[in-house]
Image (cartoon, rainbow, N blue to C red; front, side, top):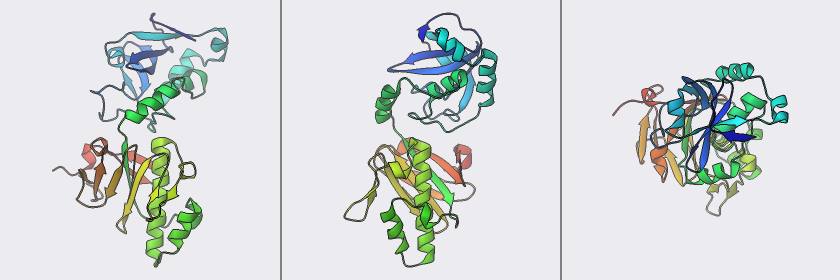
Length: 282
């Protein structure tokens, strides 16, 4: 596959260079470019809906840079989904979330729409960018009885929880640990089984892959994951404090990347990204 700055036709894969990496999209028209997330520029960071599959015009996509079009070779033309079906597939995913800079990004999206296979050729560059990209995601959920001992990994943590004095303590600790598992999968694409979980001599658990913090107040649990040190509390202390409008739960986050914190309300296996309208003001 070669890339050239030529005229686009509907169903084309297009890209634009932004610093060290490329941002990808599916071209439909000058007014419709479908992409996973807004172009990763400073002015777009933190915008509502910026990490969903969305539509912009070509100017927003390009950010003032040259747009390149994919020129497929013969074997790629044979393998590709038709332009019409590519557009249908891309449109069907508008509003979809689950963005992950390493495992589920804009290049994965366009390759799946065109070839039916999610892949990323710039994985090394993306990983390097991830190291310097502030990530801090906080997941909040009402505690329930759905988590059993068998759901807890590693075995040492499972045994540790089983030794807690009361049934409520065991239930709450199991739940917050399972919430951490969901947070790690959603944010980094890493389940706890692959996270290198270790218990230090003082009793603190750590991961070789990311930083995390968990807490609960008996009714709600919170799990924060980040690529820098992080701490989460259900209460009013911390660098960043947010109070949900419904349910009224106050969550506070501290750490190097707390100013970039994104909050998610989790129910079962679904996590909803919370926006300003979900929080009490002031």
